Amino acid sequence: MSIATVAPGLTAGTWNIDPAHSEVTFVIRHLMTKVRGTFTDFTGTVQIAEDLAASTARADIQVGSIDTRHADRDAHMRTAEVLDVEKYPTMTFVTSGVREEGGEYLLDGELTIKDVTRPVTLTVEFNGVGEDPWGGTRAGFSAGTTINRKDWGIEFNVPLKGDKALLGDKVEIQLEIQAVRA
Image (tube, rainbow, N blue to C red; front, side, top):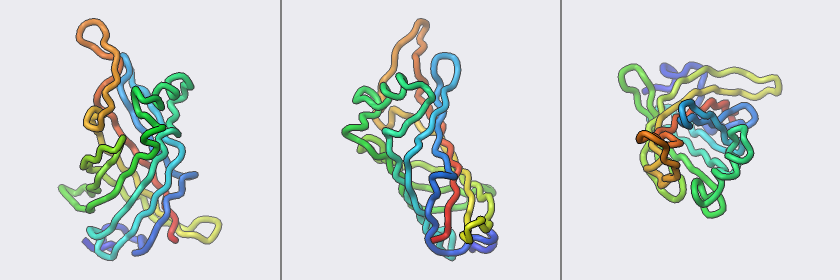
């Protein structure tokens, strides 16, 4: 899988995620709607190889930076009952491979939350490369996956009438990444 044919303009080397122009967001069912949230403090690098399948990436997300636009809910999410940010302050994603399947590009990796590491696969879209006003080169990517929070030991819930619960188990993760060539 040649980088030139898959991602025109993307060059091999180190690309640093620009957190000011990137987003790490999630969606979870809460009662009868969905709540969206974001993590505002994260870092990461992407190592692009000539053979795209050999490329790697790593992201470190500070769990305490969770923001669901509701201060009380965010404070509860940080407690030992849910994310336990004092004991597990960082969530980490490290890739194990890039592959093409059925016309889509998939990023396989391991996601660690609360010291539990599990494999996940993100569907990735390459959004292009361009020069920024400061003389740098930037690349854009969108990626997403859905996980079951219970697989990472996030069990908190409140039972409701009729076999319902306050929170859904599925969490949709969406990434909008802008990376700067080092």
